[in-house]
Image (cartoon, rainbow over all chains, first blue to last red; front, side, top):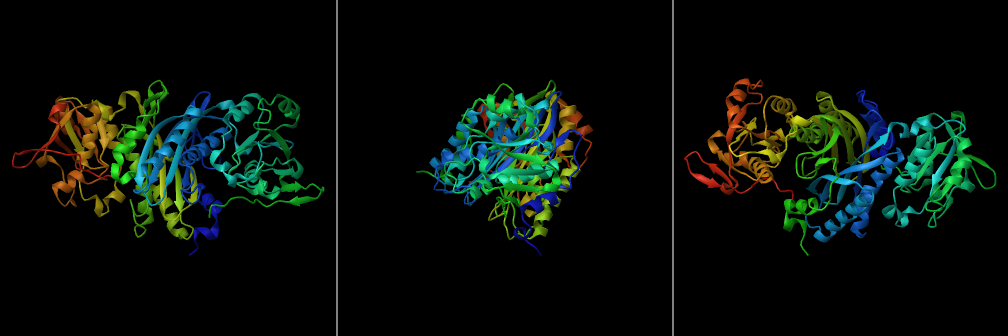
Amino acid sequence: MRSLKQIGEFEFIETIATLPRNKKSVIQGIGDDAAVVRFKKNKYLLFTTDMLLEDVHFLRKQRPQDIGHKAIAASISDIAAMGGVPEYALFSMGLPPDLKISFAKGIYQGIKKIARDFDIDIIGGDTNRSKKIIISVFIAGYVERKNLTLRTGAKIGDLIFVTGGLGGSEFGRHLKFTPRVKEARFLVKNYSINSMIDISDGLIQDLGHITKASKVGALIYEANIPLSTKAKSIKNACSQGEDFELLFTLPKKHRQYLMKNWPFKNKPRLSCIGQIVHANAGLKIRDEKGRLKRLKAAGYQHF
Amino acid sequence: MRSLKQIGEFEFIETIATLPRNKKSVIQGIGDDAAVVRFKKNKYLLFTTDMLLEDVHFLRKQRPQDIGHKAIAASISDIAAMGGVPEYALFSMGLPPDLKISFAKGIYQGIKKIARDFDIDIIGGDTNRSKKIIISVFIAGYVERKNLTLRTGAKIGDLIFVTGGLGGSEFGRHLKFTPRVKEARFLVKNYSINSMIDISDGLIQDLGHITKASKVGALIYEANIPLSTKAKSIKNACSQGEDFELLFTLPKKHRQYLMKNWPFKNKPRLSCIGQIVHANAGLKIRDEKGRLKRLKAAGYQHF
């Protein structure tokens, strides 16, 4: 009898995702950063959920405020990647009975601070006894129908962009990042963003999610990949999870206009890293010496 | 420095719940079975979340299908207790890498079966590596504005009713119960249900949630408390959590009409167990010998 470790996470999620049929009101079920359901005539509801586990996603020696921040920031980033606005949050927590109250309160302080910063209401909570700290977050938000941006819309000829610098998230940034809601809203309101995702599994793997969903290929230029100041190497920047930057594609003709009008300057910067090509070409990278290499989807696997 | 064990769950939840301010669109935040937010003119959205932990809420030796069933049934029951209809579910799972695939699939089979039975779409999922099995469920549903039933509406003179039989849930029923959506919908559509809750912490404790939220007292009659066939004692039936039956109050004058028209006969039966009284009277029970006893809110505490 095989175990989960042997089949890997993605195969397992695909096993599950194939089965349920969806109501007509479901625009997007499992398979994007958030689920999308009908709401009002010109608006959709967005739902996303995430779980943070002690010793997997964070350690007890870290600041509890940072842990709380990360718990909710990852889900906010999912809403941003759909082009949407987060509105409400609910939590299920598992807390060890011997946990210091000050630590538990610190987690909530972190949650509340970022909720306040992003104007999100905390409207539900449930606490349980557990051996290790568990934080499960659910966020509901909305997106205007015309601004909804899925993984499926990348088109041949689109340019591929990424916000910020990649890599080095293991040196603390994965706990303190700012979800790119403002940036995503600027993009979807002003440009024809054909596809978007947030980088949670690593640049190459998340680009692979877009190309697979959109049935296209991609060519990226190693020299154009923006490294964070803490990135150890280009390889690290390509495969490191938890950057939580936006990865998106848009028609080539908008490039000049976007680069000129990007209002955030270098906070975060904007980089054009490549181009969407025909599916037959697969996923390739041109290195700094001009050599073309085929990429495998390398990134964070949960099992 | 005190630990969570020392202050207990309810005090901790109250510490958290006092702080966030809510948007105008929030009808009910933390403090009821589900959160309520504005949706359409005559409809509200309902959100609820629950976490099931191995060795706390279930054991690995139990049938995985039953574990999956329970994970979602508890949240469906929360939606029912608001008078609403569940529509969408999202999951965050923690699964051990060495877990047999057949066991993991069994959990999903259980989830899917009850989702199908209640016409709920599974629209989101997220899996993580963990030491023990963790299932975190989020459910979204709706309720018509006029049918929304909170804990806060109990009125002096209301009669107190409960569906089904209480107690003995530890003998497997807590894994296999049927959430009372049908029954709750019958009630809110046809009667002036002033307050409602589902019994998850135990009859007395959940009645205490209603009386506290409604600023009233309650008198219940021991002889009228319906025991399940597996209940060990009246005490067990009063304090056992996870019955997942409905506890509700309605004006006295509707009693006859309700008892006569209850369409479910004994599946589940309906029992009138007492009356809402003035807050000064507190929470009391009249035992079978006619003696009046003051009750403390005894039920399941998570810490």
